[in-house]
Length: 505
Length: 62
Image (cartoon, rainbow over all chains, first blue to last red; front, side, top):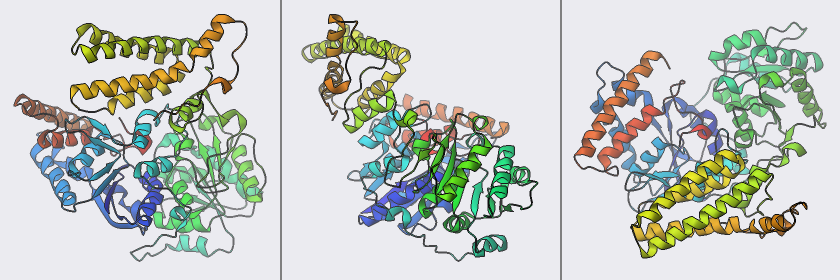
């Protein structure tokens, strides 16, 4: 099946898409990939891709950077992109970009009969969240959310593939010859495998800071004979100069601004360990199987974009200031020696396995709710009196909403019923603000409502009623707790063995 | 993103919105290809971050 995959995010996202592209090819697809021109280099080497298509946003927006923005000229460039892609007659379009822009592009590229996955648009122009994995992304993924499913796994679910080890581990096949810089060749030909230290990241808040890196590098050079190689982009030369200015007998090898991403593949393959933040080299290391010591801070979710290679470890702290450089050194050394590390680390057992966190990170109320709603696990006992009361209010409000919806079945357009239903939205907004844990449930509900789409009014009513009935099923689980509390409020409710295992379908 | 670039794109977005409103006033709805393509350009402008390109997947606007 001729398939177009849209991956319009950044380098790291493109590398995290590699396994899915290989799985699609393994399933018999002819795989085409659309990326931004600026990040095209991250698609090179993936043998599963039949053609790489590019979109140059600067070129499209160019006519607008003017005192008199030329909308028509910019639209011509948009149309040129659409024509280039539409003439390919893709049979399937998979949008792994989850954005408003990509949703419209997906819709415009999807003629009737094309199999579409990911975000698209309905015929009325509103967002169409086509599949369940994209609905999960819409509701639960991103900054300040509590998702623990890795992006690569969400991509795979969206694309409808099951990943295998070889989808990561297959060696890249480069189409163009490549001349390796002398300094890179020297590292690759050294008999001693190095530690790579990636001092940069796509955004500054993801990385560690020059003086912290300096202490890490010094500590590694003093504690081991292993070469330490610095990686980063040209823009990170200033950090490299500070970080590399160590006063020790040995010096790091400074390759900052001197490597292509293809060089990083070869360096990662040769290295014993890569140390870095959320960045393209960490995602390249997932493909080469290189253990990573990932330094992760609160601006990113390591659950979503952390390392995947077996033997990797994650040090997750609120900010770089909270992560002592000697802890980074100690953890790196225990990884090299094959010893157990700090009790706070999150262990990566393998590409196909979930992370293995320490007990204090192993679960949370929000993760239990996510697992219950999306993965069929039992629903959790409310963790607080506020949550208990929030669920009770939701139950009562939802009962009222169900009554109004049934009333509308016999009296379409009943203004009182419609008014009461509008108050339901206000109530769930208030509950979500007062009991943040319940936002998991509320976002699931609101997303499913968005998915109903433009249909004849009686069908919208039927589907809305069915959705409220599902919500009722979930909230009814907690009735036993309220009855228990009413009968014997001094005795705490038991664990969740009293809950049925309801699955939301 | 430089202030001047931001300023140009903001002005362009305002022109684009007026163009869309003109189309809507003619009775053309949001699902029509004409408006969909104008909205596509509008979304491309909106997603220009200070790094002048899209953010990572997990940070995409809804």
